[in-house]
Image 1 (cartoon, one colour):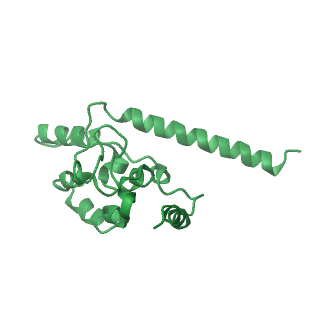
Image 2 (cartoon, helix red, strand yellow):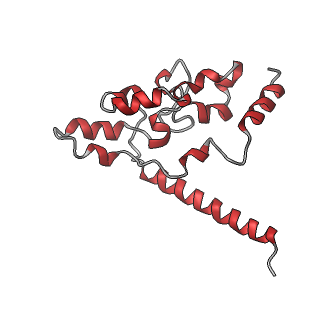
Image 3 (cartoon, helix red, strand yellow):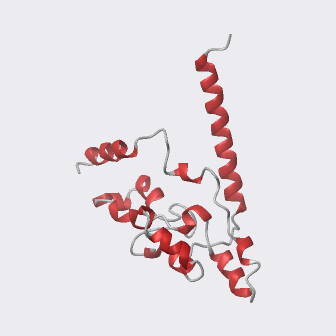
Length: 161
């Protein structure tokens, strides 16, 4: 008879492989020449979506960072757009348009989508050049197995803040 622990281990491993496979496929779908352009550029054509996003915590989550957290890679990967990726967030001074979790955090860099939309008078090619959001994109930052409030409190306590 197979133990519950063995089943949990196998299911966990399968879930991890599926997640890694999805993320690899997602990354492969992004053209190498694509660049991050910032959510304000997305707003030019996607006003309704931008207005909805702007009312979420994602739009202003960078402002929740305190002190040195604005330079902490562990914080920046979820509180900015494209941190650690080519053309992504570097610093508030260098890339202010990429503060917060913007459109491109989930959809990927938007330059190719914008370029295709601008080159087509009827806009048919533009929609094909933006990545669909993977079903599990949220868990890159919203891990259901981690209590984020407790994690942040622990990190802040360790940093003396």
